[in-house]
Image 1 (cartoon, rainbow, N blue to C red):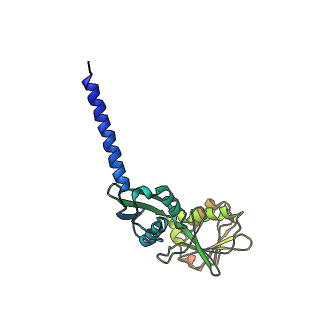
Image 2: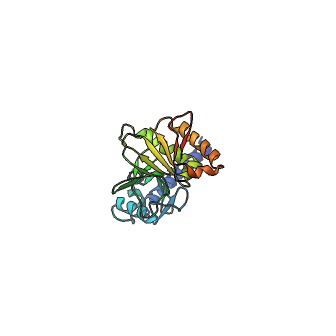
Image 3: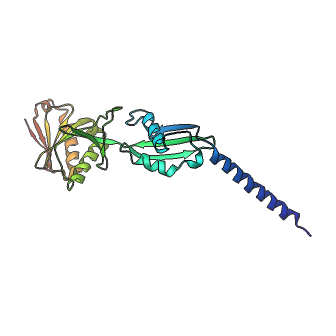
Length: 239
């Protein structure tokens, strides 16, 4: 006796596998019809434009966007875009209707480094980001030289300034002296902030914030020429 129930299940399974294989084969044979590019955080303040990304994709697809889905190496495309100096991370996937979707997260500049004719941004890891003709970030300007051995200490200082809403708006310049000491400039007043070497960074910045919030209530703050936070236990002001 045949077990018709089992036979029916086998037939159904066979049909499902056949249909899946058939649809997958047809899907792979479809050509890429369109490209959708989106940026994490929206389309404002873009260092790299939709057109630039479109050109990068086209370049890495052999110079054409009319290509079958089965011929598209998504992993290779992601690697190519992730190697771009303005892109932190990208995700690429294709849809059934033949659309190639690209989601991009830009690198975030935290300072702009200027030395003679050399100018570039630094991100939170201290990696160089080229300037963009499309958008200019409003971040502190760094001048002076620092070697790779001590770079992490300076990047820590840059990050602490960028992460703090008050400091991000207040500090406009960071000058690194040949001795390695740092002088900060602020947006609202003419005094220099003598920071010293980039050590005890969080403590020094905390002291400066406490000084500012107290001193801004006093009209004498306009007369200060220097605010010295080198000493972690006190702030020394000079008129």
